[in-house]
Image (cartoon, rainbow, N blue to C red; front, top):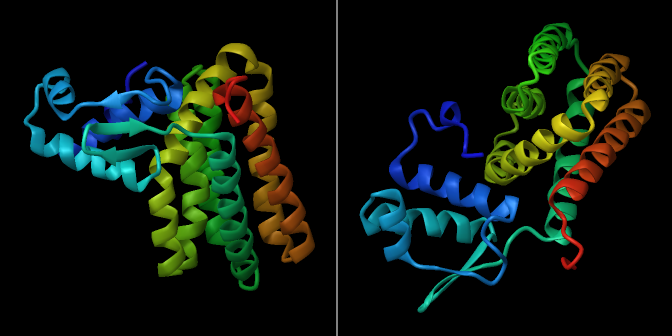
Length: 228
């Protein structure tokens, strides 16, 4: 599986390289401890060293590699990394959903329902790529609608790693546990219900249960026995 070409639209060469390498690292195609060479990557991608250097800086900022003189050492995505990513997502989305629920969110709920319709269509067509994208976009709509600029920046800093991990996990889920996909869609419907309930406790409980399921799925899909 390569990084979906439809997700690469309008990206620079460096960003495209980062996406492909990120996927290989998160999927485990590039082992933890491996050393990435600018020259080798430039040759593999048919690019100059400049965009490769840009890509490596992006991956270093995401914590997937460590830049050293001899090259870039692959750190990978550990169990602790995934735990922390979802801790941040829970904090952000719970806070924002509570704030949004204090006012009428009929329009937002309708937009979120449209995303769920697209998720359902992707499920019926057994398309994990589109399902993954719509799954994360559902949550992104909540962050965008909040108009909280600082948290939106944090969200976008997390998005590349979260989306890639979700793609790998969802693809496996479609292959191994396809019957669970409808349950995942239903959990998104519960988030809309929680938003409209205007009840902070319902929002907290619903998001916590949702993210516990997602986190477990990512664990099962990405974690190897030798990872700590």
